[in-house]
Length: 140
Image 1 (cartoon, rainbow, N blue to C red):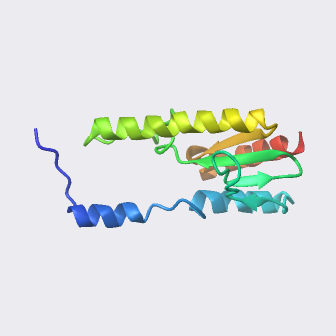
Image 2 (cartoon, rainbow, N blue to C red):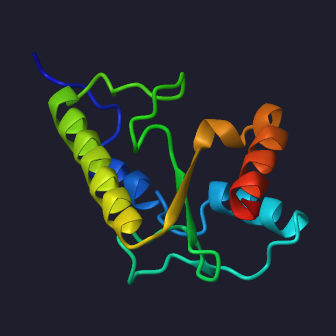
């Protein structure tokens, strides 16, 4: 059965190239929450650490990862496997999850505390609870 994609190969490539890895809308939301709570001293995307955490508090020995529900297989309503190329997407996204687990394990081994924030937790209806969770994590 042929797989149908309404976009040409070039259009699909161009659209996928717009998926950002840094300074995403989600990261900016979290940085605003940190600023509102008075947390100012952190680094972004520290490449020397496993998994290149999105936000790093070196003095607190704490890191925050901000994950998209689709790209990291979160078990929420936002996540679902695309109908086309299911095997490709299943393998790709599963390998993301395995890589995440390896990185978390290595970070913990190095003494880092980890907070993972999900895309669905950064919706307006959940933002206050998420901000409280961030504050509790950083102040504990």
